[in-house]
Length: 365
Image (cartoon, rainbow, N blue to C red; front, top):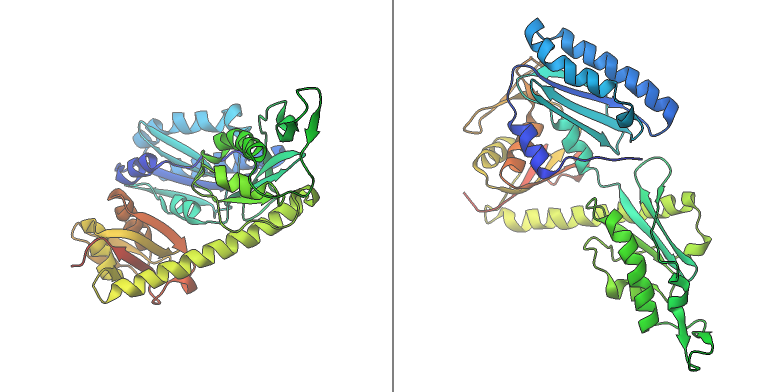
């Protein structure tokens, strides 16, 4: 699975883009060739639908880049579970996303970045590193589908690192079986594996789950340089795990990690509330987001009410969608991101106050 996620700079550019011929498209895809062919047809149909909603002049400006993307064989060989495309005259962004998102065709004066926000905020992705004396394997795990093993460029002499020379170089004796602790050999072994894994790990901010044998787990944690290594690991011996079991156990760890993060976030929300450093009212949060006051924002991933927010942060909800309307929570999220805040999309039951938004504020007021 080939995932290309937007950088903060990409998001800022998409959020700030304004043109009457702004096209946002989402279609399901797959890294399986037959399903990728179906996704290409779906995107071609979505392009035609969007162009049909534009005037002739605007359509003529947007069409070439979109047609080129549809016809790009190299792009279709590197797919994930959804494609998000954003096009306007002189502008084209395409992302392959790890989540299965609902299809979308939207034409307006700005891009609909809601699908990107929701994809980025779903925390059911992570890395799993299997580590034992016989070697190491790295898997990318997501909310659905089989884990994807990543190739590790391990040194040819990796196994010899765990051998200790004690006879003047005439014989290499393996260390005692069953020993635990952080010997220099184990640390060097763990460091060599980490050096091979880091180029993959640092392409994302995903949490890393360690599944290591008892003798190597402490050594790896002692030399770890990846800031998203979780304290909870997989306790089963890595040599006994197949890909399906890796995914099952990893999803359990990710679920518990996500739940613990939400509990801690809600506690911070409550602790700050009396000091005016958190807010859960939609109108208040919209104003705070407009002023750059929001440090961290939670939004209800399923709340679809549309409307508008003016330059002062005043919200107008609309009973029916219109060409100029947009999802209110997405626009609030966009304003938070524009000011350097963090956004996470969650389910309604995870929010602390029954509102579709909750925010930690940088300052009271």
